[in-house]
Length: 560
Image (cartoon, rainbow, N blue to C red):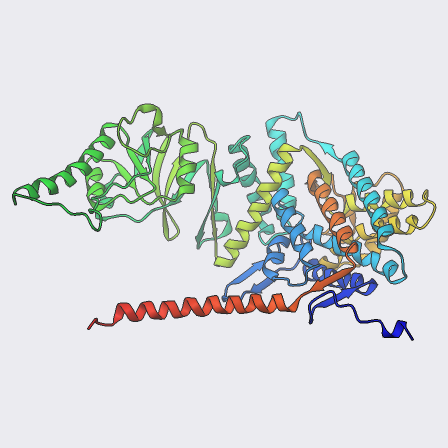
């Protein structure tokens, strides 16, 4: 009776939603499996694309895992972890974003029956961590180094890695064409890590084959004044002056006040303004530069002044393009035109303005330091060019990684099957429950070849049985799915390669994510804080709208 009279203990605010225990772990696993099922069909060369329509009316067509995960706007707290690992895979190695999400969701799917049967999540986590470390160790053992090869051999090997990445993209039909372009672009920037030294410019129209690589810098013609058309559009070995100043008549400050005792003095003030701008222009001409680029505006007076002296100028050049011109030509961006010496001027072999589709491009080629490249992309629809850019970004990242960590592994599900076989053999040596868990981890790795078959319309059971038999024989470590015939083939001999770092990162991130999700057994959600956030957002929108209306009324109405 005394126990019934115990008062109720209230720890959390009223209305707080708490979910805990085994049901919560299973619920989290189900959410992550649903996310995995969304991107599942985009894997591999025969993967389908997703069309994502956002609330602003924008349409994105993509099969890049990271892009899809970012645009899905997932609200489930556990499933958001999969978005994070896709982003980290994209920023770290560039490719394998679909793989990492698929592996994580499959690890959790395999763990689900054990959780439902009452196995403690930490027993699973311990086994998964051990299996993950063994898998990574095995990848390192199976990796083949491409170090010590000649430049031509290395280029061919890197092109194979790029082609493997591009084969699963929208531009897979032209993968050889783009793979060699990507390799040339990456080799052009040398050891520099800055990805923005490779510019990608998009010009609608034409076909994919009309895309080209500029060993230097190319950017769209900037806004220009009337005198621009009188300027020369081609130079050989010109000197280039890069500026970060305005070359136009400066108006006086708003509240400037000048008191004159004599009306004639007014003319001298006007003349002083003109003398300042003419002095700047004169110094630019005397520097010997034939091309003047500025991040800020170059006015109509300056444009005509340079045109009369056969000098090309462009104002309002974007910061990124100006920095790339500086890196390529060896010039330095100046914030003043005083004392411009030869050392700060850049140079290139050829400068010309070319028509590309509907746009005009300023192209600097044959640059001395040559540490930059520009890919000009062509294509029919805007969405297509956007997706081509994302695909090339993945390929560029992969080639950079392969150059740095020069080991590759066979693709097409070969490495996954080999690790799976290795872990199954190891599981038999373990006494206790861990044997089941390591076996489940090994089974989950088979999702990659299985999904490649499903996406290509092959019989996955039949192909996987052939692969298991081949790998078990001890001499088929490089055998993976043959997408063209629906059978199995030596991935290494068919040049289906990927950098080992992609696989290592994917297994590592997927194992960590699945262990993290398994370790969560309670979710506390406070609806008060959610409604407060919603009200704050609504208030901000109302405030902004009201302010805009008030401002408009103030400007439009006549004062009485």
